[in-house]
Length: 119
Image 1 (spheres, rainbow, N blue to C red):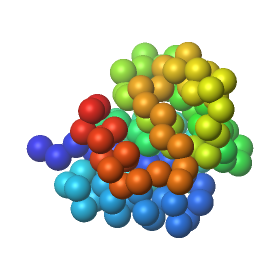
Image 2: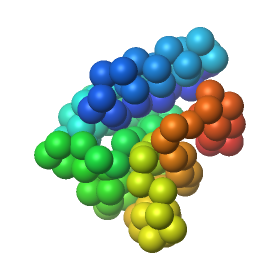
Image 3: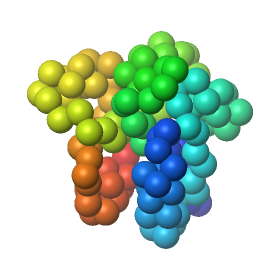
Image 4: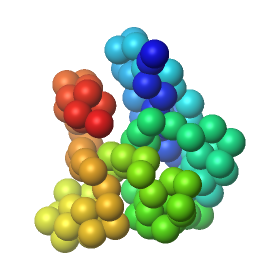
């Protein structure tokens, strides 16, 4: 059975690239444009993993990751943060919030696929 991945990204081009890359690799992909939509999406259908942007309008990726960790039903969903924030403090904060991976933009296809395979 194919694994399901939720892509959370407010930039249409970045979202489409991740969707295509993961779909072509055999994953079932759904998407959301911000943290609020992501939280609603995981209540409807629990994905096997989430690739989450950090800088988004409304609820950002850090806040959404924290909300997922605090939810009884969603705390075990692995989250990979995909972001242009490449400071050590950002990575440390992501790990403290429970993110299982951290990819900085611009990323390679292999970086994304290796993270997906590791989950």
